Amino acid sequence: MEPVITRFPPSPTGDLHIGGARTALFNWLFARHFGGSFILRIEDTDLVRSTEASIKAILDAMEWLSLDWDEGPHYQTKRLDVYKDYLQRMVDGGAAFYCDCAPDDLERRRKNAMAEGRKPKYDGRCRDRGLGPGPDRVLRFRCPDSGTTVLNDIIKGPIFFENAELDDLVLQRSDGMPTYNFAVVVDDVTMNITHVIRGDDHVNNTPRQILIYQALGARLPYFAHVPMILGEDRARLSKRHGATSVMAYRDMGILPEALINYLVRLGWSHGDQEIFTRRELIETFSLENVGKSASVFNPEKFLWLNAHYLRERSPEALVPLLQPFLAAKGYPARSPEYLARAIPTLQPRVRTLVEMAEQMRFYLVDDVEYDPEAARKFLVPAMREPFNRLLGELAALDGFSHERLEAVFQQIVSELGLKLGKVAQPVRVALTGGTVSPGLFEIIDVLGKDAVLKRLNNALRFIDRQAG
Image (cartoon, rainbow, N blue to C red; front, top):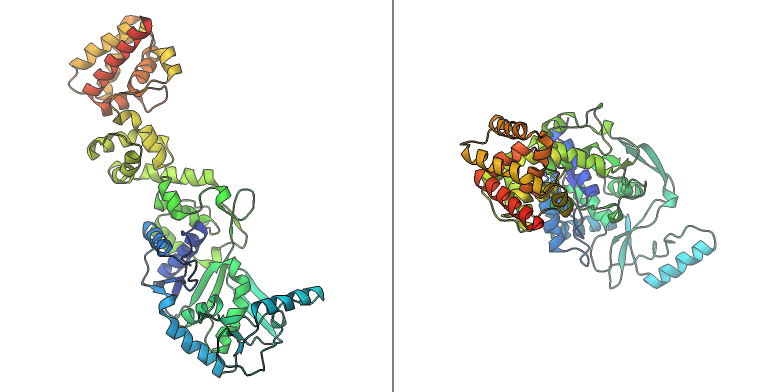
């Protein structure tokens, strides 16, 4: 079997969105599965809309997802001499002709064709005029007038296109730039691409590209068109469904392995397995198991998957990922060791790094703010004696193990004739400011003796002020 070579060719006109990221992922996995090569190509011939910022955003997203490439990035704007050579081959072989039809005249003729019930395609006026290159002239492909072009798609099966329905598409614009359909064929031919894996919005481009391959006498690659991603309302996924940019998900506190795992399952399956390591994906990925139907992006399932990966990561590995989110909230800086002790208490409770940063607040601030309703209900005069007893007992401990803390609390509530919950919840409010948090003994252990004693004393002063 010849070496597999795939490619991902984004246009740098914006961020890398998840549809493009899934296409890149499928190409990357297919190449890695067969021990082949994955090429990154930047299709930047749209000089008006292409930007350096978009190129950087695409490369950053690819690197964040760890979709490493074996060759590239190649830039189309640096390959103009290659396209010029292949355009001349098309002219010399009689497969292309120059056209000087003005855009407004072309539009008028299209409208007339539609009004007369004809297909609004180029009418072939310049096909046999024998024009050469010149100002305001484009180069067009001489599309066959008859016959059928067959796209043998690995995913969709055979699709048939009548050549008479196709157009004499422009290969080179009047400014000298090659058009997408021509440049992509030349790139794939010269880079020896064996498999073209892309979104099914490219299906209608493919017969035109096949005809260009044939005109150049080039071997066809295998084509595989992946169904699109839909929102929960079954409309094409867009910004109104939420974030679509890869880096927006990073900024929401998503882990790259969660996004990779979720994207690969949008349209591909391997039995009933939902969660995959990267190694497992490389070993099991195949185009035969890509579905023919569009996939629906389910935000809740995505967050569930991210929560799984947050629990799987070691606290020490999460610290550097979490720190930017803590800094963005303006929290006081704490040592990595302290954060690594706090993180395990939050891992089972959060779905994103943003949620973890929000719930980390009481661990980091000097003084907690009490939820008014919680303070009204739990920080009451009846808590003076339990809090004072706790202050004395906790100050005497030389370590905050779960067993020692439980013994202290049980002793105090027993002597005072109270149930544990009657003391534990007020202490929780004193230490965190609210009624919902990780386990109380976990909190006390992470905060440490000085912080716990300080917050209990602050709570007593609050009770006195409210009572006074």
